[in-house]
View (cartoon, one colour):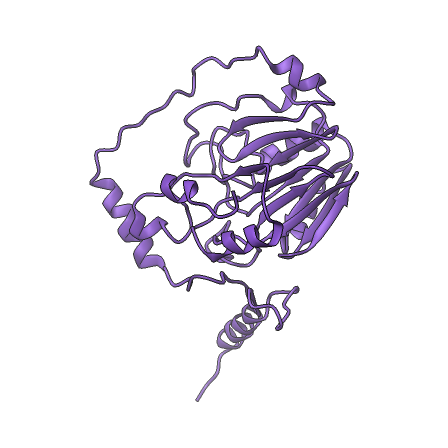
Length: 293
């Protein structure tokens, strides 16, 4: 049998991909040698299911509701920029929220671009513009990222925030620090956390907790970087940011662990058709039943 150099290289690459998780801990159920996995769902949907879903989309008469050019209400922008004492929540759009609490401005999953895509000229386009532009925001001290899909981890939004802020602190799930380091941004800090791990910034505790979702930015890196929900705790308030997630046992586990929340932010979107989306996205009824609330 003749073994060519090409076969040897492919074999080495395959073996390397099987043990490509530098954070791998065999004692943690959600870790795999090649990345991460969900606890309550067998991540078995593959390319055929994806193609079936896209094919069925073509046969649907889906209305393109696009109000992207509707005017933005800017009447509260000045108050938000100067607010340093009053707890406040501003929905920027999609899963991007501005949380103002204990004098700190916190952003979740910043997405300010017109499209959620690796390119500017194609890909899913947002239905409405951001409620505030990056330039309109107050100084942001902390950013939490739930996962690495383009609608939650947007390169241009990250670069824009770094340009208009100094000493901004990114809190990300395992595997994302290298991605952010590759952007070579100045004046930012990055803390990478596994599920159950915490980091404190100015007396506010940020804890990464489980979610049922997945990560992917290319054809070859699915499940390579971890995804997470986030618990944000001050001395007298507790906030839950679910990130994208299917309805599963982790919600009850988090509710039991923390007792109660003053605010739960549960993104509800891309939940149909249920045969395809149910494992990774809650629908409105599941959001209402959520055990963390």
